[in-house]
Image (cartoon, rainbow, N blue to C red):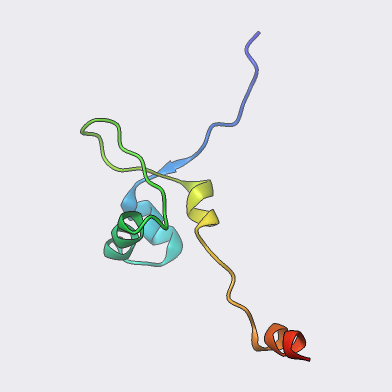
Length: 71
C-alpha cells in the first residue's frame, strides 16, 4: 500500500506575486539575486515552492526589540 505523503506546492511567478502582493518584476528580481529559489524543467515555466517563498520573508526588528538590546 502506498503511503500518503504531502507534496510541495509549486506556484507560477504570477501566483507568487499575487500571494506576496508584489509585482512579477520584483519576484523575478528576487529569483535573480537568489533571495527566492526557483525551478524550471526544460522549457517549462518557472515555478516557486510555496514553502521556500514563505521562508524568503525575514522579520523586521521593531523599535521595542531594539531598545531592549541597548538597555
